[in-house]
Image (cartoon, rainbow, N blue to C red):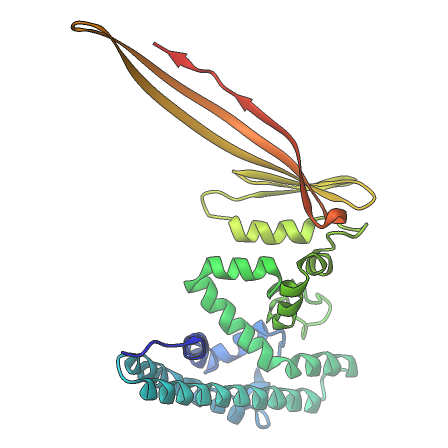
Length: 323
């Protein structure tokens, strides 16, 4: 039996993520998907120019992925040579899908530029969006895959800034600019995260700058920890620092020349004890004790001292009982 390495594993994940796009690029679904990528086209545009052929090429490339994924899975139980060959085949088909996406972006741009009903400004905006179609399709596929299968991984990538899932409001006065979510993988941020995490936080969230307000950071943390049965509360009020209230902790911006983060951890605990003390003969004494307490720990995270933690206070309530 062969053991898949990181390249084989990555190829399989990419294949699993991209495969569902085949159904979404066919028929009436194609217009909806293109709009999700930030391009709203007239219905007739999908049949114009080279766009139908480009859509078909993308579908064909994507529909070839499931068989290659199955072959890679089967090769895991075989030799290393078979595994490597299967991974190479799948990787080649993923590359072909990427090339088809590039062709699709070019075809979309051709349709946009040939549309006499669009202004020069609209053509420029739609052309820029069409040029990003390959990256946007890949980002949408991977984020959908993570949401369905590995939501905690998606949340962690989002929090570290390696994944952006940004709501773009669109333009209510321009029908070609719909609201959508811009989904991107930010592999360009990996080196900064690893080599200088303090500077990475400053670049990503503004933590360590005078204008830090915490809203972007708190929004991403809220997205990570929210559950249907327990959602965190992001509190923003005029002239007041932002606060994130969650079940087990509280985060708040501490105003100063360089704002800090004030953090409270809410930790509950309990302890039951029972002790039997021999007295003599058949006699013994038993003492039972139960204790419950709520406690919290507060500390500051100071970016000016390398994100050092400073303990502010602990609070505890302890009502023991004995009998």
